[in-house]
Length: 79
Image 1 (cartoon, rainbow, N blue to C red):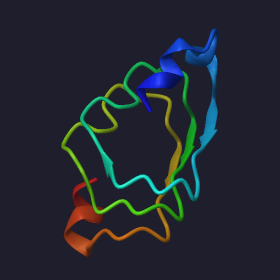
Image 2 (image 1 turned 90 degrees about the vertical axis):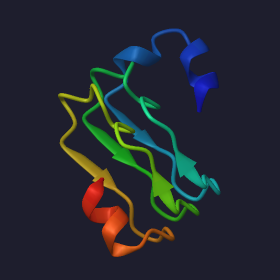
Image 3 (image 1 turned 135 degrees about the horizontal axis):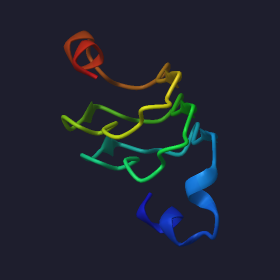
């Protein structure tokens, strides 16, 4: 996901759909530089966990879709 930082204008994106990409894990501050992000869809991946702070800095975020991943209930609540 770090490679997205090199795309000109990416920091202005409001919605990102990364569905069905076999993403296994979300690291801390992965999306923190996307301060305009309003919607994030990560459905249908293989996410088992997300580090604390994985969604830090997303003050404009209105929704995250995480359906169809491999997270347990405790992980989902922590996120």
